[in-house]
Image (cartoon, rainbow, N blue to C red; front, side):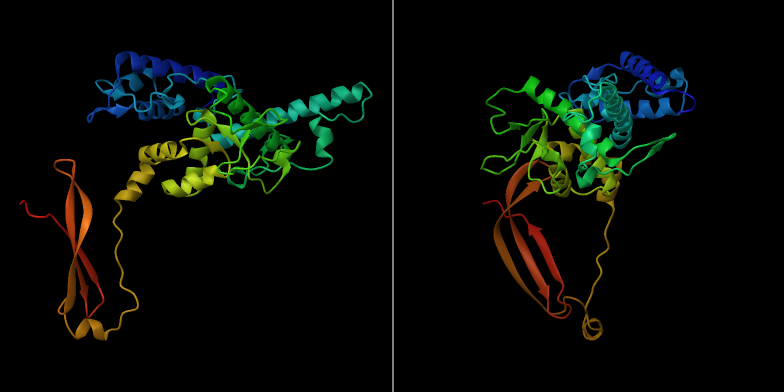
Length: 349
């Protein structure tokens, strides 16, 4: 990033995005020879951080077809829009954003504490510094950040807890602004002005005054699937847990946030992740275990085997993109216990 501050970097990034998108119109439908808008924006951001000249960035995307891959999400926004928040979660990253907000809330809570002490009020219920003397707040284990040092300022776990609550309140405002009362009838608004959901729990959600202080908690803050908080948390957990599968990623995110249609977002993240695409194409070698050496020298594999046909299955034809009936030919080797399954297409009658 060089000597650029966050404000200068943001202005340069917005200017580069504007020039690239003006030179290359955005298509509403997906194109085989084109690039996704989210991928183009991420590349522009990387070039901007490396301080590439603006003309070189524009020329790099000259003649490129760009299509909008996620129109209803903030992932494809052309500018660093924060949606009323203090920070842009998607473009800065969840971990770094949480550290910055922890420093901000440390300053705010310290200033508020000094104000009521100057007014000769020793203890105030709404003061975070006064609450800090009694008990500490706990973050979800999936997004726990170690206390960091910013210059000479040491942030505590409670500062991160206040930053997390602020992000949850911003997500609550988005939910209240874009949903109706019938859509959020299963949610409960806590005393901390955060919407909570209990998932599939059919009984009343128990909320205490200090709901997020509890280590074991079955209620989680609510966020929209196209919100910056949901996407940044999914990306943070996706990279910090070594690129898990869709179901595992859904489970981990569900321990932090309650997001409707979460599986759709997790599939999108896994589909657009270059590392996941590389791992999916990697060939795994099958290794034979617990085999006697006699089974390899007595006879060749499948010298003697049993076979049977299983019917009633469906297969997808890659040529016609149609679903057809298929049969399985299952063969089990009597020498090595190896199993071979062949898919067969029924004859046309």
